[in-house]
Length: 428
Image (cartoon, rainbow, N blue to C red; front, side, top):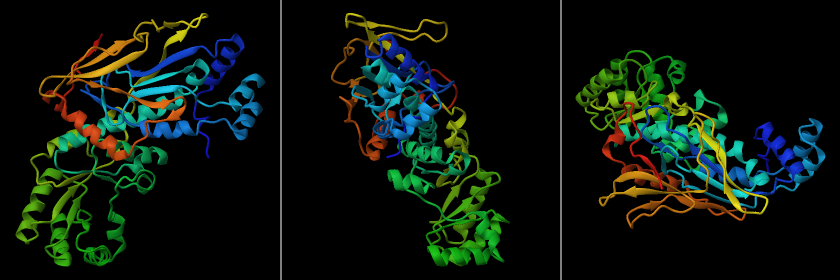
């Protein structure tokens, strides 16, 4: 087991030390992870990272190596080290299921435990949820814009090696068909795809030699990269080498819309009417939208999906919203500073739907579930009960949930222009 306990901020442990010394560490507490707002201009967000967070929680232990490090570096005192050595999360966690959509003030995670147990999870949960949800939110806009044309995640070389794996997983949840990242396939079962880069063409004496080598090894259903030299000549050679049953060609530079139109016409003229056209080259949701009328069959998206297409984090926060007083009675607490106000109290949430199943509002209640009807959906599900993970599920379940939840949104949610959230958040 590799411990995840030190994937945290220094002040989580110093808060713990002070609370232990003050006798307040064991006070029953409720923490909430939520967004104050959506990233500027976004209409909705996508919850991702739930499954990863549950996996990391299982390894959140302070073993001998971690305790020795903290002692050697004098991060906390001996009583705190003794407490950490026996740390196990024994509380309850509720949250939005993975793939679900979120809006301003959605209570995405509710952690109920002692202050000591719950506060230590702050950094771990925020880092996973902020990253993965940012990727999934951008990916969702891309796949919705692409429609029936598949998107392939190809951003591994544009981010940290571990972030690349998490990004591939998050993008798949939000509708990407596959990824280039093999570790994402090994860990999570994300489908992978890939054929060749320009270096493979440049390795060979001629483009024809490169194409023959690839087709001989990978079959005529492969995808040939046709923009190393002259696109039109490469397409001619590709069909000559592979025949009219060539699987696909990839264009990675130039005016993609114009080139795709020219290549489609050339392929059809050569009899390769079933050969698909894949385009890559710094695509985002706006570039995908601009190619809607072009004869493109699939999109390969790299940098922009792994950086959240301009919003690499969601701005989620983790706040104490209720805690026990000296008599054990739970009292609501909240931060009141300007621009960073939080709302105290344990939250509940439902998605209000109209009679036809279209989302109308995110309804958040304090202390009790808001009143709804048979058509509305409760959003918080149990993830951890008495310290045991109960919310683990297959990745395909999150992918299917995302598709269903996104389909509930009103039509304006599809717009890429900056605007207000697709539905309002109501307090009840």
